[in-house]
Image (cartoon, rainbow, N blue to C red; front, side, top):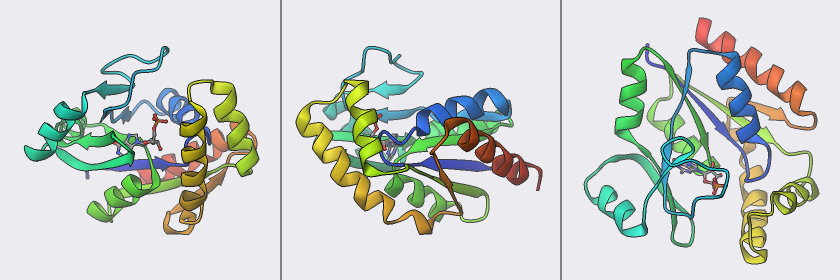
Length: 187
Ligand code: 5GP
């Protein structure tokens, strides 16, 4: 059966670090590279972290029905999963892993209720998110406020996921995620 693993969390909760760890620890996992219309950060690579598109290119793909799901996560910042991405991963016999926001993650779970495992990464507190986003230095003051407001809404939906992992200690959170996913893959 073609399987999917959704990792969702508010921005700054450490889900990207956890996903990187999982990709190394579980070779059958393959990362679903999303498309997005935000600016590329310095440490990011087009085609590896995201497919960076202009707003017009993104909207064009929406019209063509290229997305499995998409969302305007922030104003004029579109994010979405391309159908072609998932299909090519499954063709290789691999399991898709998503680093995706809560709404998108729950939409994918709804599309694939039986073969999708959904995991929510819980930050220890809103203060800890604030600190992480500040230290990343990639957000403007406005963008930071929007991300923190969004985070509170996302945290309130944690009970809709199959599993919730507290990211108080990154190593422990990684181990826990590995255990849950390995179990899902083998069953
Ligand atoms: P960031 O700009 O910090 O990389 O991502 C902003 C938010 O968009 C994050 O919560 C991220 O997980 C989410 N995101 C990334 N890819 C997708 C996607 O394909 N679909 C949706 N709905 N959200 C995504």
